[in-house]
Image 1 (cartoon, rainbow, N blue to C red):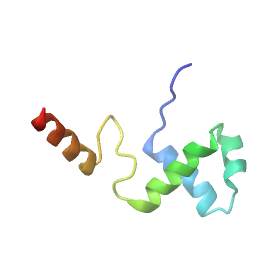
Image 2 (image 1 turned 30 degrees about the vertical axis):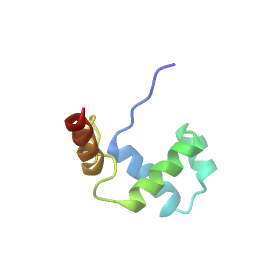
Image 3 (image 1 turned 30 degrees about the horizontal axis):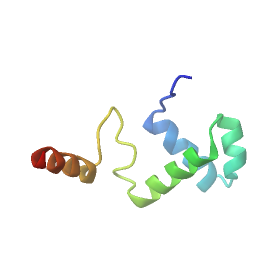
Image 4 (image 1 turned 90 degrees about the vertical axis):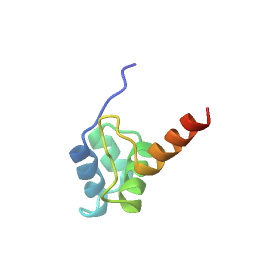
Length: 75
């Protein structure tokens, strides 16, 4: 099975489908061919930190990058 990648714009539009347009999560998932847990995670990430959500291209959030650097330093 191939892991699918979604653009930041796609993720934001998928969340908007539920939050702004009044669709239900299961309905949006069926129309977008997504698993509910993925869409719910995107919704949580976008509400927690809208500017930092979905950095893309293998970029980590600042907190995760700092933790990784500290682990590397300790090792």
